[in-house]
Each structure stands twice: as C-alpha cells, then as structure tokens.
Image (cartoon, rainbow, N blue to C red):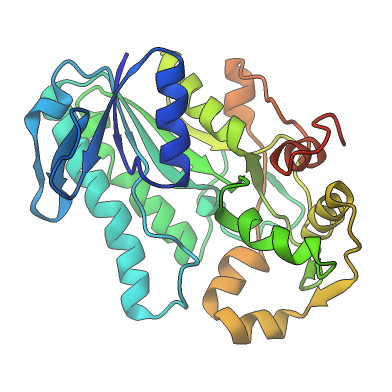
Length: 302
C-alpha cells in the first residue's frame, strides 16, 4: 500500500512509519516545513493547501494531528489550540481525500469521546458521546471527517486511550518517579485509566488499514479496563518498586487545573468491541503484560 501520514513526527506517527516500512508499505509524510526528503510533501492546513503529489495513487491517509493535551495548563487560548490543531487538519484532509478519490481515511480521535463520568458502566463504540470539553472535542473532531465519508471513503475513527510507550507519553513521565519509589495512585484511584500498548495502537491502525470491513469508530484500548489504583499497582509490580503515595485530587487540580478533572481524575471504562469483533488479536491483553513489555521486563507478566 501507499499510506500518507499527517502527524508522522509524533510519538505514534514515528512508530507507525517504522512499522509500515517494515511490512513493505510505501509511506508519504506530510510536513509543514520545506520538504527535506523524497517521502516528504508540504502542506499548510491553515490555508487548506496540500501538495497534490502526496495523494497520487495513495491507498490510504492516516491523520494523527493534534497538539498534546497535557503540554501546558489549559486556558481559553490553549483549549482553542487543541481544537484548531485537530479539527482544521481533519477538515482539510477529509476534503482532499474525497477530491482525490483515496479509498481509506484513518483519523485519530480519543476514548474520552465517552466523557469521564461513566463510572463502572462499560462503554463501547455503540455508546453515545459524553459531556465535557474532551468529549465535545472528540465529537467535533470526528464530525470533521464527514466530507470523506459522504464521498464514499472508508472512514475509520481511532478512539485511542493512553498509549504506553517507553519513548514518552504518560509512562515516560511516570516511570522515573516510580523507579525512585515515589509512585502512587491519583485521587481516590477508583477512576478508570484507559490504556493501550504502543504495539497494539500501531497494530490497530495497520489492522484498520488492511481490513476493508473495518469502518466507523474503533476503540484502541486494552481489552481489560483497570482503575487508576490497579494501574498504579501493576506499574509498581513490573518495576519492583513500592507505590505508597497518594496525590490528592485537590493537589492535581491546583497543579494542572481543568485537565485533571477531564482526563486524570475521570476516565471511561471503555472496551474494544469493534476491533475484537473484526478479528483483531491483542498482543498485550492485560495491563500487566503491556507494562512489562514497555519497561523491558517479562512480557508474560500479569
């Protein structure tokens, strides 16, 4: 296949490019600076401009664009940046893909589509959108793919959980603290912490690219949901470190503001029904096996 990727320089994009090339696929990367390699093509989402050569003979486009949710404290301007960095590129790509007749669009979204107040209620792709800033962001982000879907493009909405990677993301921030014996649960620990291993995040994307029966929303989440307290114990176990500490909710709110309530102190108990029904087999079906694989321990740990 020829796969065009927007957001190829991020944590997930870098891993996806490498995996696709290992499997023998051709990758074209969309960049917002002058092209510096034969596989790079310039685009400017703000101006709705895209080098038409990028989509020539393309079999699929993968859109992973979006500013980091936790990079800085949320305020009005940053929340608008979070929206603009997702919705504008998606709208541009959906229209370009439709015009070029590209068969498939895989577009990033987030598992917080379901909101953070589901409690113990299990949610899957058939569940409605939740409430709150992140739920609304994900809903509008997905809606921006409509031009592609209306044109008959097979459109997959990748509702990703926290991706566990040794190269960065949430685990990259937590592991040094846990290694020093400073780990602990966040808030009361009863909230769910949706997770997926990097191997399964990439596996789900490639599965969606190569299986024409996959369409619509898919939850890229591990099949065994855990609470934050369970996540905390599992990480301490694979690192062989105690996890005695508790970060009170009030401290998290004071430190990082609204993001704490939206994405840390709340989380949906989401399961990957669509992926499993389509036949995807998870490499890391439990949080223990996923964490062990990421930190280099025995990947059979549970």
